[in-house]
Image (cartoon, rainbow, N blue to C red; front, side, top):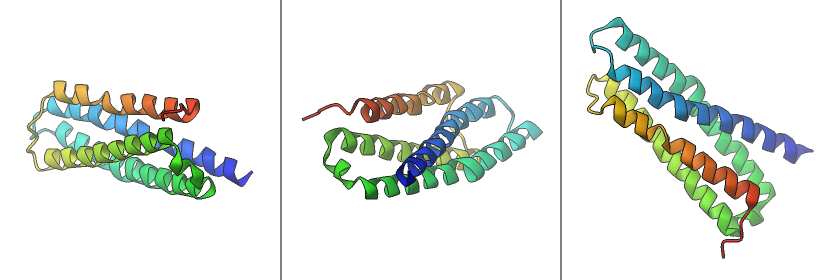
Length: 144
């Protein structure tokens, strides 16, 4: 029963983390469309900061924590190729999260160099990796 609770919290926190990964680039799209001297610019900065500090980082950290607990219970997963690919995909999402934080900091310094179109495109990255991760975990394909 303990394992199922840990797995449930891992999934709940993963959903919260994914929401932040999907919403933050959308805020950047809106941010590109407002003047850097407007109150809207500052409001978007505040929204991005809160999303990062209150949802994204805590959800990501706790997702990893509960994932590590799950892995300590079922450490044989480390020898499965599908699981190694899942871990690689999660690492890419972590790098993506760090990139999004750097983008936020560029907006904060009023030095964004990207277009709204760019942020719309990168907004698809977490969706692609979410699909890959879910398929790997549910199907557990024999990859060698």
